[in-house]
Length: 492
Image 1 (cartoon, rainbow, N blue to C red):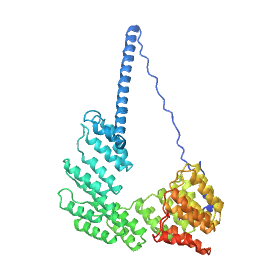
Image 2: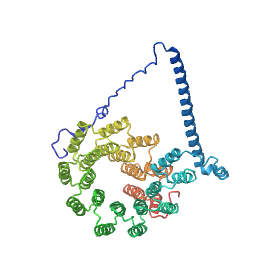
Image 3: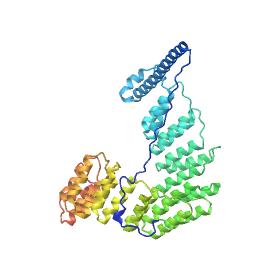
């Protein structure tokens, strides 16, 4: 598809806001009317039956209200107890059995699950402490594993270790899953020494021998740190223990090697994956396409796309976003248009990534009219722009010298709750410098303070570059040099 003939010019591939939605018909369910309880010659019995039915309904309603009130009271009690900072004195006076130990299990477990899912680790631990005070509480290793996993994602390995020890103290024997969660907590935070020590401890603990998941987690963390030597030693360790990498392991390696532009290792990993009868999946396909596409190897990307499809792997929206991005950056706009038409034809709903990729492509091509149309379409579809969207728009306006339109982006920011990052401000600085608005460029430092975003070395270097290009080398440039080298602060 992507490598096929061009079916339409790039500008004709813009989707319709209405046609791009899948229509789901609503069907109203028919309900049969309840039968009236009647019997010829039995009016008295029917009357008594109706009275009994009314009484039963009233009793059921009363019980339902009691249950609802119990749940509401339990939630309110939980809410009050969780506000420890504001009600600490009250909590200290409470005695077991006077409220704190009478919360419904469902209420506490639901509150714990919500906080774990949202990675609100501090609040989740408070709920867990509250749970441990309940009369119905019994230690359960599954809850500990969920909490340890959450703390790992939040990069709180010390607290994860404390919880692991508390689990043991409560009589829950550590198992493979709990050890793996703790290994993940340390490795995610770059604490590889502790993580590898835990791996050695697992090998010596009966029933806790590390498996492919344990190794895959460690490999992924090492790859994030670009420590390829540790990855090699882990793969060797796996082979020695007779543990074969699975699809997740291979996908992690392929993705990391591709992002690092280590194509020989990526290709050899893919070949090894196939030789081990480990079937590639959509993640394998997308990682490979992204690696070749982002490096400008379009023909190789297209060849891989065809081979993966021939093997039975069905592309998804992420696949088409990768193709769009690769063609856009390679300025192959006709092929990009063909992908867009294909997506529209087969009703692939655009995601924020799709919109960002297309907006960036139009901006790079200097087609501001189409870029603005896609931006309006994005908002009409109620897809909220993010910093990536704004960066693409600001860059395009900066290249085109559209000062007024750069300011319209700032007005959009003022009237929205978009969280701005340093990349956006650096794009804004470069855009103003490019159009020669040095005063506005300098004012970005104050705007960054308002948004509690500190300038980095890129901010300073970009400002210095545009000042010097315009022949200005005054106290502002010296301040920026000092800020860049750490001799000054943004509060100076």
